[in-house]
Length: 187
Length: 279
Image (cartoon, rainbow over all chains, first blue to last red; front, top):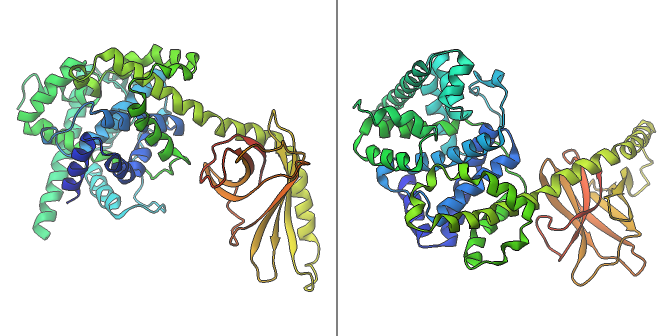
């Protein structure tokens, strides 16, 4: 249901419906800002990246359709790209010792139920990865480093870095699928 | 599954492909379940983020900048953006256009798109800047004053409890410091009534006289979030005062500020900070 209403909103946005854009903004402001803040570690940059995302959506740049996968994946990828642009542009460096820290399970901050559900699922999937694979995802996804940079940080050959990231993501995907299928059977 | 396109998945996710390569890869995604599913799986990673509280006024800033495009389509009036800021953005815009804009080329000439972007992107930065640095500067200035106020407060707390016949007790009083370029004096006090209700009383003098609809607005600020806490206008001598019920909530605030607002009733500050103090 979430999915269909997102795509419905998106189609209204394409017709320049301001209310629809505001609705989409309200729906994803918190997760997008939190994600962008996690990436940039800078509130101003996070806001700038978020604005860029909504400007692109409003102008219909990088249009979404089903062939690009889930709407949220597309939305988050746009956000991630905006943050990467800003990070690389301004050469924001995020301390490397934070790298291996995947967020802990207990957070006292209140979250929406949906966020919590998604988080539990992805956390469980991530926990099935090796420490090294988790680190790859941190460096690659959240820190927005290029492979070259990751190779440098980890002291690994470029080819090895690429194949390890791919392996980590592939395993993540399988774990998530496994959980979703089990979830479907449970219901 | 493993063709040469699949090898580009990581580059695609990492934003290192050119526009053309991105477009080609998105074509590939349509036919390759494996790559699409991996891309989707990464789309769940943001949920690992710890919740962060968005800055005050972010929504209105972003939406007004997004919608500003409609008004500004025919805009040669973009000169309002400072040329320095525009230059800075223009200098780095090439890299920002690397990914998701890949499909823009068939919608608008690139130059036009980017020209608008220069204008859009300069706006929020300018708007945002006044708030944080101003508070930071003012906080620094007011630290000394606070230390004094704090010591006074400590003394007051050390004193025996006020006689019960006393109807109201001012138990925290603080002087606000003027921002650079502004004159004025103000004192804020929290007053506890007999029934336990807390009121914030602000008195000010020597303020610049207001024009038109302008008001002086008091804000209580926690982190980046300001809450309106009473507004006042001044008499001919530049004096004014306000009385505001703060619902027993005194612990959380870190700053009190008075801004000069263009009109009453703003939920978020638009004007500049005239006076402020850390709490």
